[in-house]
Image 1 (cartoon, rainbow, N blue to C red):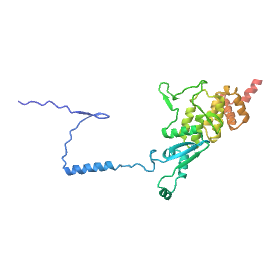
Image 2: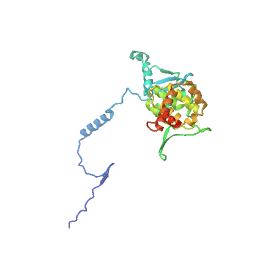
Image 3: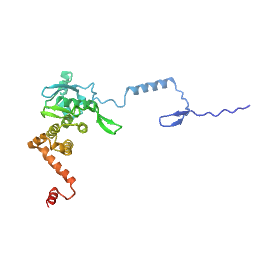
Image 4: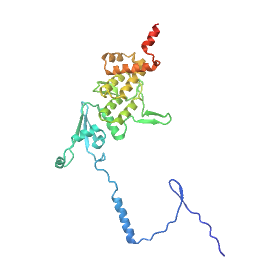
Length: 294
């Protein structure tokens, strides 16, 4: 009596993207010589990478260490040359001290490289180095998914309602200024535009900054940025106009305006542009004053 074999359900293989039927593949008979030769070829391919690592860009662990002397007190910092070379400024400084091949052979080692930064503030350079190594500096920028806003980690306030760590004494300015402004100007000097954008974004998140600190920072920004800068300078002009009710009662503002400078001419132009936006098109302040006198 013949019995029918039950139909066999093909096994299903779940791949990453979809389920496919497993297909039985016939086994190939190989002799030992062919299998050993193929295995040796596989080992050889593993030993020889297709794209060997570029020896011209060493990792920080194998890169020479550069010594930096910072500020009037010559505080010593150390950083790897491969990390510093992300800045064209530091790359040129390191290249100037790279000896020729005969000298390297005679010394049998890389001579120590030193960079003097007497005008820099140590606290500012520390933030620059932290950014070069980690892509950010403390306090880090964090996104709040609930509010859909960007915040600074550990956004604590002092007794006067000012952001903790927002300011630093800068010996070049001889005053307390916003730390992010000093970092922005340092990034301008070291040709790090991404750090400039980060510092400007962080500066806008601070609160409770005093008028004298804002004005000192604005003067420092004008002294350490080119006239073509349209980011940091515009930030201070907009800030003063937006808080004009506070600044017009400030004695520091009066003293700074009596000193003069390009900052206050730009502020005058910005105020005029603001008033043009407030008044209707084609109606000047003079014409409106004349109509009021009639």
